[in-house]
Image (cartoon, rainbow, N blue to C red; front, top):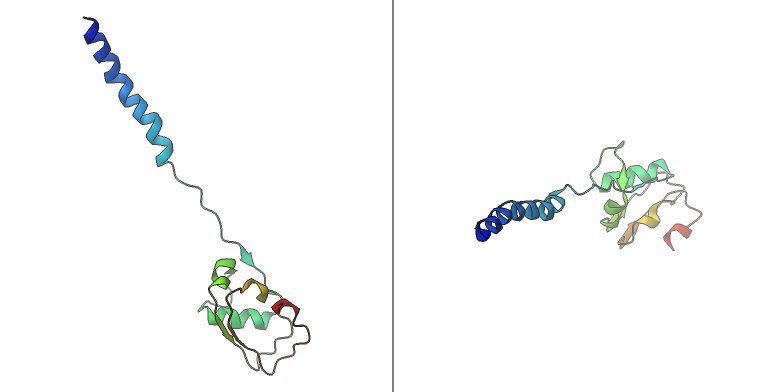
Length: 107
């Protein structure tokens, strides 16, 4: 008789224990929105978006800029490089014939 009582308890407790353990593991993980970079110079932003195959109005994320390795934007009327510091893997940069006076964002 006592053995049957224990079996009944385990019959209810085991599924309950599994639910308690498995439900939190199956819960949806919160999604983190990508960090968007603001590029001050419109023309630099346009050149970066073109290199990333994005439309002119699409935002650019830090992750996307980290994947950028080459940028060529000659004669693009770029005057400010602010925002390019978010391109840590940029190994080839060609910005000939622009209006650049401050190169500190490249440092």
